[in-house]
Length: 86
Image (cartoon, rainbow, N blue to C red):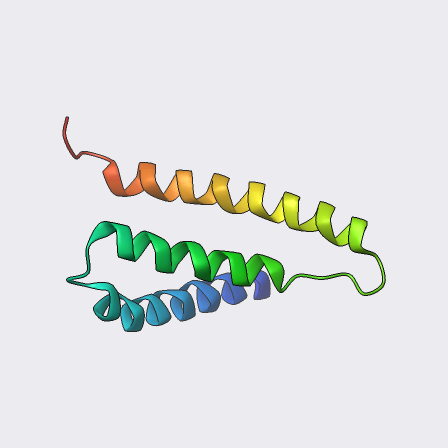
């Protein structure tokens, strides 16, 4: 395993551990409330990506980040739905 692979494995494990801590906080809430919380967290995360002194460059970076994030969410949805309802 390369160092980069090890870093990715560690990152994935950290993300999964954090997700396991967050899931119980959302469990039992209706889908609209869960969606609102997730949307707000994503907005805070994206807004936190700034380029000092260059608002236009920061706006472009945030737009690209949102596109990448949306693609990843779609990939995860497809993965979670694999073999479900069909």
